[in-house]
Amino acid sequence: MQTSESFCLTSPGSTFKKLPSDSGWSSAILFETPEEIYCRVYRVLKPRSEVPPVEIRFEKFAGVNSFIRLHDGRLLVRITDLLAAAPSPITEALAYILLAKLFRKKIPAVYETRYRLFVNRRDMRKRAQVVRQERGRKLFRSPQGEFYDLVEVFESLNVRHFHGLMARPALGWSLGRSRTRLGHFDPCHNAIIISRVFDQFHVARLALDYVMFHEMLHLRHPVEHSGTRRCVHTKAFQAEEKLFPQYQQARLLLKSL
Ligand SMILES: [Zn+2]
Image (cartoon, rainbow, N blue to C red):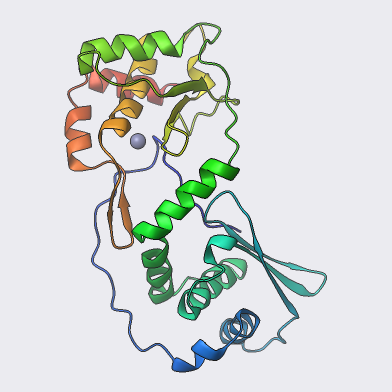
């Protein structure tokens, strides 16, 4: 079980939502240890079962990830060390999120919102980006593929659509041939990674051009944050994407991969 974030071509454009109100925190939680918080939340979600021993460790993960599992009658919780100094209400919110996922229950919106607001704070995002850069290991292949060279693809789009002015990030083919994650821009490593599914003889150049163009627009249109929502494909992004020549034809080609 984990919570994580990523950018990818397949994620639908999101819109900003109104936030439910988050009031009425219990003051008692300010005096609980993380273990006590998990025990209490466990009792709320599973009132009829006995609470197992809880073991919580803060780990140096490469992102804002946290994991939970039941093993040998013990509840093991591994939380990103980015949250080690988080206020108790945030630990409580994460406990609800992880335990609800573990028991396949609906996560109460109030906790989901509280947690998201916290991790989307500017200072938290900055720290998360730094640890991703330092700890994350991005594995992708060289941009020179078997059929297409991503540097050439990037630069020819750069000339046609960006007056040749876009600074070239790191480029690479993905390790696998994913059909669901066609491409993504990784801002931490300043890299565009394209699925190797496009590096094949029968794949039309137009499809590859379109995916690369989409990822290049991510360089130009940063993600917008508003409360808990991240808007990856902003209105300006979408408007510019539609300017791609043969936009509809390219979208159709992607469906037939
Ligand atoms: Zn995208």
